[in-house]
Image (cartoon, rainbow, N blue to C red; front, top):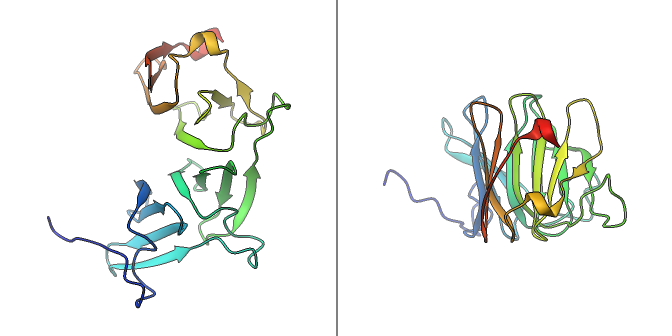
Length: 186
């Protein structure tokens, strides 16, 4: 162990909470940490300080929910933040919300559930999103709407991990097994 990083309520430059939902490193080497209840923190290893973005109804361009359970950098440099109930907030590098994707079970082009369990981007730019209600969504490059994959193609239960094979297939691991999906046949 090199460092043990914990929340300190007396210091503004520490991680926002100790219960972690997401961790990833962006293309510049900065570490991002999503927390359950205290938003998103950006950690620059050179300065060792955290900069937090927390939910506040007084910040109209910020996070729309406090629980950040998944997050990742997309190829365009935007940060997609999966929340535990309000879908996805899309942030620019300055931590301003520039887009969002909200759940609407009645709209086939929207997320079917707001609790995000997995985010991934394929080599071709397609974005894949899994939700707690066991659904898998695909957003093709150049579009702004999701497609929902048929439940018959999925393993069952919430999808917790996605990986891509060298041949472009998508591997989805879930509570009730695993599926290997050829996106070109859907």
